[in-house]
Length: 311
Image (tube, rainbow, N blue to C red; front, top):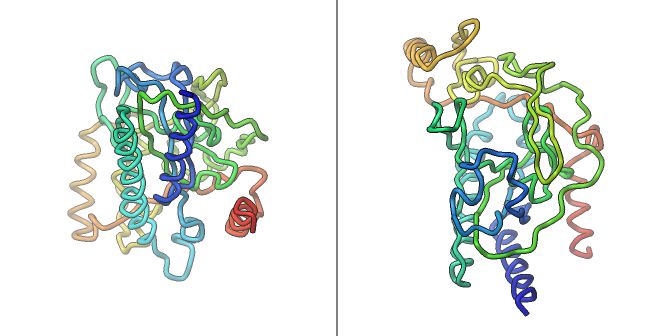
């Protein structure tokens, strides 16, 4: 009887996610998070946690592919839809799922997106860390694999989706890990696409998710954030907003003081436009899994959706 109730609840939550514009819904058990720091596991957010729910929304695919490449030469839609519409939809869906779980008598903690601790925190080493790994949760819930660039690659959309999570004490049945053909064939296009040279081509880190080990290329996170977060490299996007101002990072290690100085210089040179720019993650856009290369992803998505609906 309990299993039937949990199956019914899981189906209810999945339908709620789909009705909230989500394209992904899956459940990951606690043991699949053993490879991450204990402060980033589900139990760190809810001591009585039994699992984590991973939800995700795909980007408008034509927008993702054409941003900065069409005659408009604009990243404005990417900025608006990623950082506003998609974030809002994902957070609202996570909140709705959390509220529905509470309505059914279970505790739930919705997780945020793209929030970082800039400096090392207590026993968490390194800079620019998160308090929960939505990427690990997505892989642990069966949505895809981690590519060499560290991004989640799904079989339907490659890197073209955004994930968040909900931690709950509801004992929902876990979904299987992705088991199809490899989604990353080490093409290294992510390395050549990064104009910041932030991704190593020969140094790896390893993370275990559900008994599977994924290799990711080491990344100079400060060098990545120089463009991704602070938009200090005009060639990665700001130039197409009308801000042709680049501040070159120093050689070697980048510090917080280096970023503060560069932002001051950028503001003095760029003026008001400094704060209305967007930086494209070309390392992710160039990442297309082997079976999707040369494919019309929109047509493929439409046909798969029609088939799933019996059309």
